Amino acid sequence: MTVLSIERANTTAFKTFSNSHEELGNVLKIVSVGLSLTIEEIQNGTPAKSLWSRVGALSEHWGTVPIFTQEIAETAYAEVANLGLARSFSAFDRYLSDIGAELDSIDHYHSSQPVALKSGPDDDSGGLDNPGMAFERFCERQNFSRLNVEFVAPVFDYYRAARNCIIHRSGVASRELETKVISASLSESLANWEELTNEHGPLKLKSFEEGEPIRLDYFDAILCSSILRRLALDIDAQVIRRMGIEGLTLLAAKRYMKRCQIGATNLEHSTAPKAIASYLSRVNRVVGVGWKTVEPQLNRLGILKDLNRAFEGKR
Image (cartoon, rainbow, N blue to C red; front, side, top):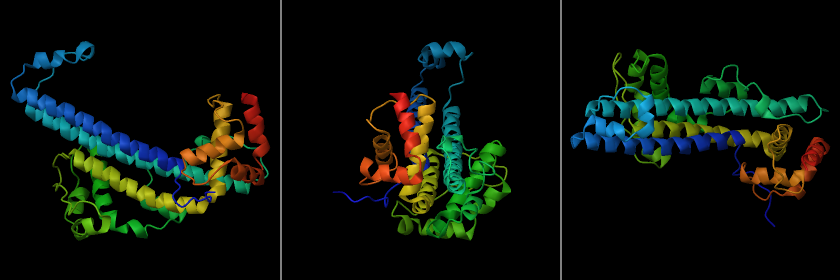
């Protein structure tokens, strides 16, 4: 019999973030192929109208034929990379917000017992004072350590400064970004990157002067997303230790209740505890979990009756 273990478990928030990371990689690869083929057609002398006609019905809604030049195509490549980097930070902000909501939901449950089971962390306002809250402030508020990921901080700061320029300065480098590029801490982090991460290295990041347009590439977007994922992994391990199996079970039950309330849950399982156990195994990667371990947890939490009632109401 497999022993119950949360050693390799993850939160639902991390599962969402990880999916976004993988999706970003696939999107950038597809766009890269498209732009590479476009540049190849331009170099081969294919007329603009011929290229535009391949868009099909969409071209009817986009107005005049665009100017197809290699320079513009390469600019588009950089713009997509810039937006990819901005999106990776957006996904990270959401992760922090969702984690804050999950922790607040657990704290609220324990501070307000006894209460009837209500819909879960999806209803929370976000768990952060500001969805764009700095990573450091979030860790301080939650009393999370950053020691294990301190070595990536200079690279994180570099990409965060670039993201701020892309979002708030129309992609023009700021004095802050120029300063980050030449910082001693960044140089040290890059020089030791391969040893510290077991990834390819040493890294070479682009230099920018204040006022210069930022033109990143897909390597930057993927690397940035990977760094944010590394930070999220470290936070998630601390969150799991704090939540324990009880917290994970409570959140899974709240999500199940919410889905029952909105009519979104199909009855793939014969009982509510079996449905919760399945969620904990599939989404949260809890090892050795089954309805026989979940049911006592739900009972101790005082929410088993509410869950069973919701489940029977869906039959």
